[in-house]
Image (cartoon, rainbow, N blue to C red; front, side, top):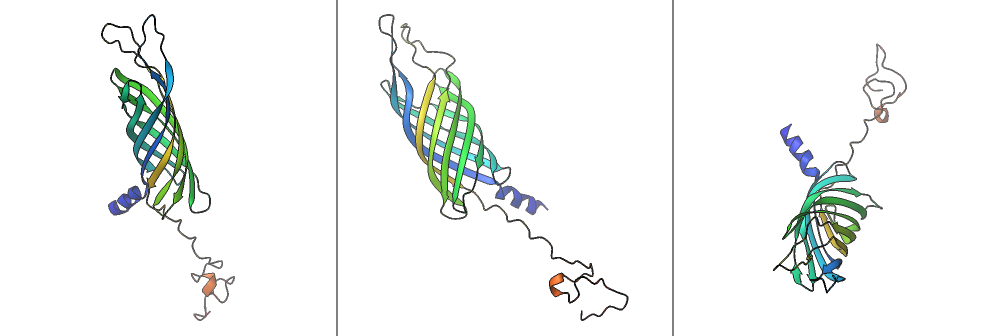
Length: 212
């Protein structure tokens, strides 16, 4: 029984990762009373790794961790992020698997943790029964609850972050177990299946013919 439970759990395991790049707004430069803040789009990259468990063939839940890199005017900013998510998948034929992921959690910046969420849509192509690879598109948002002041100069070094990114996703999962075939029909309930029964609609009598 324990072995069967272990097999059932392993079948439900999902390992997913992605790597992408895009643009992020804002890259907020230093500002003072005489220099207003400048919000500009900047190059960005994101990497995520997920470990999840399937609820059924379409739905799975997972934990996610990664980093959202911003290559801005003030240098490289590389906050980490972690949270929980839900993945909804479908099947087109046997090789194409579109999916939607919604995640929320906490982003780590130098001034403390920030609420963060993102939505991802992608399509994976199965290269074998366990491995899928394909493109994805993502909208990500990180909210700022406080700002940083450096050197006695009033300067908002952080602001709500919005990102549009695209890249490549990878998923590994054991094949979902096939449903057991229905039991063979035995319409006359004589313990001989219809395919082997010469009289499939005649119940067994008191003097049954063993050859029929």
